[in-house]
View: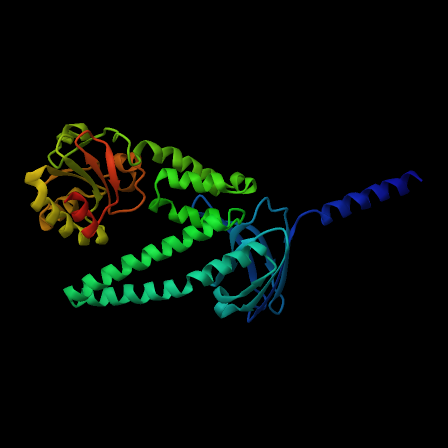
Length: 361
């Protein structure tokens, strides 16, 4: 009787474990006989394997979990460069396709992945237009077709704005989707702290425990002291001759532009003629610039200053993306800038091209 009772308890325990939240991945991949498939995710920039399965005639199964929340993972064929991405969650997920085009595999059974696919499809037309415009821009740049370059730059900027607005709409309209934090992370560099915080606050409670939302919340805290309307925090860095220059020593003109750039940065170098134009026209009327370089090699930094005729004050600690001022001002991409008034208050951020000219004017 006692043994029977123990067996019954064991059976109940086993059933309760197997019937709890878990994922099951069933794969059928043509051309993948005797291939090991790896289920991986990115952790701090590195790929970590969380499951694996050996395929027989292209068929394999993975079981595990529970998954705490849906997250983007990679399914890769070991020993090859073939892979596909999808959202893993506690459900029965089926993956079908061909090994030589694994990136195009059909994935069903994940509600979150269906939401992601819907988002991708809504962006498809704009992405195709953007890709064509960018390729045309590259051709025009190689041919030095100035008129075509200017026209395409305007088109690209317009398409980027449309893509950003479409993504913002998805995030705002889907506050309970686990896809939204990932999209918002990509948008965060285009947003001010208040706007970013308002979207995070509108998220469903379940999303707020995800690493992505926690990181975004930390980002907001870093952004607030350097957002529009705040007094720009001071920093000191050496100029090309090794002399320390503080931001506070440059504040005083009607407008001061803190320009984050680098000699190795193609988009920065293409933006430099616009900045030179603004400087030449408005410097005598109260406009000045403090260039902050994210270069690593002094000789490259100095050559870029000379080649692009950047005649204003320059500083750098030659620490690349670890540049102290860039980290202080939460600069994640360049070119980037901040426009300060005579009191050192930030009145604009990331104003480029003709927008910079018109703002200063």
